Structures are given as structure tokens and as C-alpha cells.
Amino acid sequence: MNGVSKAYSLTGWRIGYNAETWLTGEQSFIGNTCVEFKKRHDYVVAELNSIDGVECLETDGTFYVFPNVEKLIARLDGINNDLEFSDYLIEKAGVALVPGSAFGSEGHIRISIATSMANLQNALERIKKAI
Image (tube, rainbow, N blue to C red):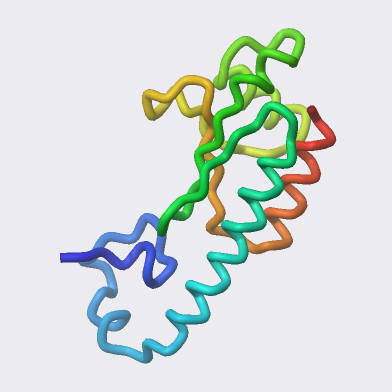
């Protein structure tokens, strides 16, 4: 059993919605989609790792990266945890992400790469400027 969210870029969709059309239709786009997501992934991981105080491991087949930002948080005045850091980024950079504590991993953040490369480049530029 598998889902359609990753292979078909249908994040949030459940198998019962339009699944037959996706599964029996043209499939040639999947290879290109995988290549494009790999480019986004590699770009975001490299950019995050270029930021002092951020450690981001490569992922394997997800729409998200989950960098450790504890050292960065320690450097920022008035920011004490990943929740405050996430609030800071939405207020100062206009970038929304999810604090890792929502997943039981304090000191981390979750960033979606399920958007365009231009959006990712813009978001990372804003994050770097804000910090």
C-alpha cells in the first residue's frame, strides 16, 4: 500500500480522492518531478548548512528538511527556543515554518520544500537577512 502525496506531489491528499486517475494516467512526469525535488532538497540543505549555527542533515524522500538550530538560537538575543525562533522568522522575515517541538524535537525547525525553487531562494534569503 502506498499513498499519492509524494510520488504525485499531492501533499495532504488521501488515497480516496482522485487516486484512480493519478494511478492509471500518464506517469512519465514522475521522473522529472523527482529530479526537481532533489534539486530543491540539495539547495535548501546546502544553504541551511552555510548558516552559522545551523546543522541540516540530508533527507531521503521527504518534502521537508528538519535542521537543528539550537546553536543559532543561543546566539540570538531574546530567542530562547524553536517556538520563539519560528515566531521571530514569521514576524521579521515573513517566512512560515514549524517548530520542531511540535514533533518532539526541541531546537529544530521543519521547512517544507514542496514549493518552487524561487520561493525557496526567497525564503532562505529572508531568513539569512533576519538572523
